[in-house]
Image (cartoon, rainbow, N blue to C red; front, side):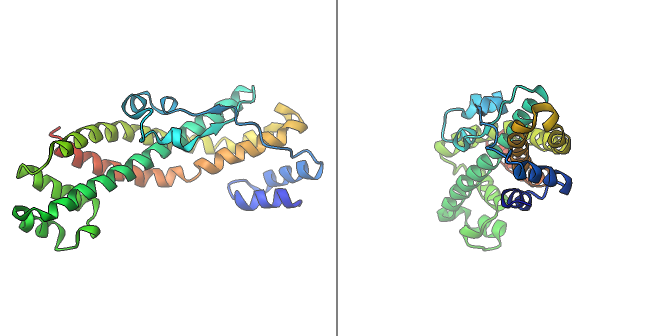
Length: 246
């Protein structure tokens, strides 16, 4: 097997040996040229119009930051796969970004309450006396809820909780959709790869195959990682709903 195809197959265990063999034939014949061009750039609106309305064009637009491209070939079956794969990956990207951002900010707000004397006993009960930098997300949310009950939340904090609650609520169905779509899309990979020579001819097929593989590589972890991400988002959503009075 030629070096290029060998490296491709090593880095992409999702491809079965027969497909790797097909790619090696392209390489041996000198037909494995550059991958299909990234003709489109995914937008947050493509992923979720609701999220685009809430955070589009802001520092929380993680889809724009990631610059997720996808190819356009002129063949509807392939173009649909490339676009839907990009949307699925974009949903996970914004889900991860918002979860990380919200978690960091919530823990920061909670740590600030450690200095509030009247909350001292409750905080010790909630956290077991652990130092603030070791508090979990659940503990941080509980500390903030205790602060809310004592009317010790600032206007800035209340505004943040309300806005973030809406963002997280809009993100959960997006990540659910990413998980569901990725499972279906991964099932299409073999057929798209083996059908590429017929659909595009040998000269174009190698580039399309690599583009299919690249799309599959981006989404192959979504079925497993997406489940844990949904759990994290659900914890945030419940806590933020309580903090924002929803």
